Amino acid sequence: MKRPNPNKLAGALRWVRAREMSFAASERTRVLNWVLNALTLGFLFLALVTLLLWFVPYPKMKVFLDSLAAVQNSNGRVTHPTEGGLHAFVARLPLASCLFVICAVALALLKCELRDFLLGIPPELPGIRKSLRDLFPPGIRTLQEIGAVLTVFGIGVFLRLWHVWRPIHYDEAATYLTFASLPIYRALSNYSYPNNHLFNTLLVHFSIRAFGDTTLALRLPALAAGCLTIPMSWLAGRALYGRLAGILTAGCVAGLPTFIEFSVNARGYATLLAPFLAIFHFRVSV
Image (tube, rainbow, N blue to C red):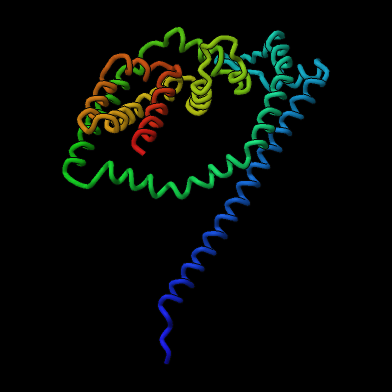
């Protein structure tokens, strides 16, 4: 029997793999095109809806918004939005419609660039995993480092929990009463002054809806972000100056009063710092 040519078999296998990869890439391209087109149409639909709402007679709009935005306080009384607040909301509808149109147009114009960027993410994942393995090689030094960081993290969490029950400060009360306790569309659309940290307001809103109007629920997003800042600071310091610098940085973040204050204050400082350090670490190290 004639033995098959190994070169031909290898070539056939390469051809099959190439066809499979080409089919998978075309399938991902088709799905991404569909998703991006759906998002574009969604923005246009929202623009049309907000514009049509602007033409609804104000008395009918007021009845609808009163029923939608009514808030029940701790005494059981239902409060409705003020006349000025309703007029301000209606006046913002054309602006919201324009913003949705801008988003749709930008997405339509940049669809190819965004699609190519998203398609390029999967091939980068093996390189990211290799970089992470290189950062933490197996060995006794890595175990000692992780043990030290966990100890520092535990101390930092303890200090934050110790202070989380202190009395509510003025800015925290303003965050709750003026923004987070309101319906979500009112909380996020009111930027009359920069005291409204929007991402923190969003998290606090869902926290108090889930766990009630308690001090811990009000401060839970900041507390969680403040605790995550400790390992994120370790990774950022480690990426810049090595293992010891990362541990010392985590120790400073865990114990310094300023960072503890950020972690038990229901404001947006900790929720900004933790993602920034995470992005900084991956930008430097990966």
